[in-house]
Length: 353
Image 1: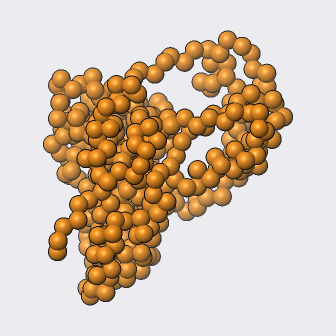
Image 2: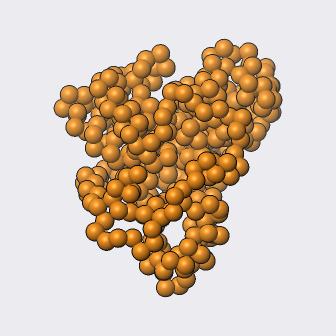
């Protein structure tokens, strides 16, 4: 509807991008292609597949609208910790953390008008797990996401700095699902939240740290480390420690089904797990506890990581995201204590035992 009002045709193509997009480009004489950025291997493969099949005279550009400072601009290498990335991010915020240019109605009529979209047919064509029910607390779309942002600023921002790590307090932004799906940008949230720095300095600065620095640190790790979802992606000290304790006696061992159903001996863990199953979300501070207990209750670090990633990606509204693998306490920004951080110590400092 918004595209129609702006005189921009919106075409929805069904199928794998590599199969349908190059054909569409050729058929309609498209002059250039622009795509967003994601550091995970599957979306990167989608981009490469399309690139290989495009005509050579069609330019193909990738723009990192996912981050504020583009991932490859923020740093040319994998960063060790937030400490090593923070200065690089802040040095470039004046260039990139700027107001968006207004979107104006397109001055020329489309050469290829869009056909009506059969949304129900699109939905039916998806090969997804329909046993995972829709959540009731969150409404998709930009308008709903901006409403959550406004409520955060009006009601919870004042206590975010001091109470964000308390699961019993309503202090979080709850914006992670809309960030993940690109329905509200982190940049928009930061621009709005920054307006209140004079009143809530601690909270605004903390939100900036978590929603920008920590979030982009997770993107950096996934972009430069191909093992971002395995124990092999951890630092040597962490891999050594995990190996040394792999055979430690575990008082409790659980199968995946028991974890998924929240039937462990631990009421707090069960509550967090069932909240994730029913609401598609879990408090960021509890996510650390949740993932670390999976390590404690499974046969190996590899199994723990596999279980944690499976549960995260199946039930979290913001699953299949760099922050799910790596993110450190980013409920303010993305909502996760990442699986690799909690289980493998990514971006932590190793200490003697």
